[in-house]
Amino acid sequence: MNLIKKRNAMTLVELLVVIAIIVMFTAITAAFYPANQADRELSRFSNSVQSALLSARNRAKAERLPTGIRFYDSNSDGKVDSVVLIQKPAPLDGLIVGNVTVNPMTFVLGFPAAYQGVINPGDFMVLESGDVATISTPLPNATVINGSSGFFQNLSVFGTKYKVFRAAVELSGDPPFELSTIIEILGTGSFSTASDIIFNPDGSLNNSTTDVYLHFHNFESLAGNYSRDAILAVRKMTGSIGVYEVGPAGNPYQFSIDPRNKGI
Image (cartoon, rainbow, N blue to C red):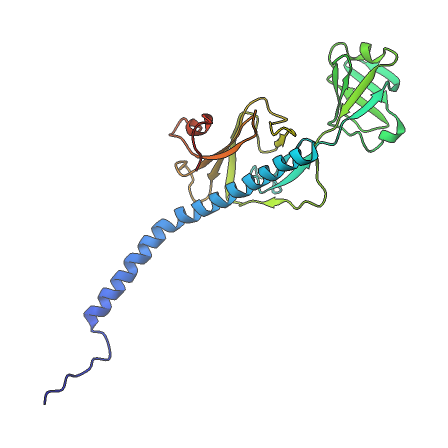
C-alpha cells in the first residue's frame, strides 16, 4: 500500500510568490493611503463646519436673534482649527445721550450708567434719522467713529431716539467645534479666515450681501493638487447649506454657484 506523504511547509517557490503578493498589496495600499486619509480628513472637516452652521441657523430661528459661527486660528498660522457659536444680543433702545463733545469725525458720548459693560467697541449706533456710527472705545465715555455725515447734527436734536446694535459674542457654555488641522479654508465673497457667518431668525444671512463659499483644501497631503477639494456654499437669501465638488482648474466654484446643482 502506497502512503502519501503529508507536507508540513511551503516550498521556496510558494513562499516567494506569497511574499511578492504581500509586497504588491503593500505598495498599492501605500500609494492610495494618503489620498484616502485626505478624503477622510476633508469629510470630517466639512461635516463639522456643516453641523456648526446648522446649529447656528436653528438657534437663530428658535431664539429669534441673529446667531452664527466664528472661525478661530489659535496657532496664528492662517489656518482655521475650530469654530464657536456666536449670537448678536438684542439691540438697546435709548433716548438721547449726554455730555456730547465733537472733534473732526469723532464723537464722545456719555451713555447711561446702566450700559457700562453692555455696550462695547464694535457695536454701532443708529439714530431714528437713519444715521449710523461705530462705537470704537468702551464706556463710560464711548468714542464714536465713522459716523455718517449728519450723525452729530441729528444726535444733537433734543429727544433723538437711537438703537445700539451690539456685535456678536460667543455663547457661554457651548464648546467649540474642533476641526482638522490639515485642512485650510480658501474663501471667496465675504469670507476670510477671521470671518463670522451669521444667520437671521428667518434663516437668511445676516452679515453678508452675497452667498458665501468656503473652499476646503488639504494642504498637507495634496499640496498643489486641488482636484479632490470641496466647496461649501451658504445661500444669502435662504441660508441653505450645501457641499459641492470642486470645479475645473481656474473655476473651482463652478458647481457650487448654481443652487440648482445637487451637492455631494
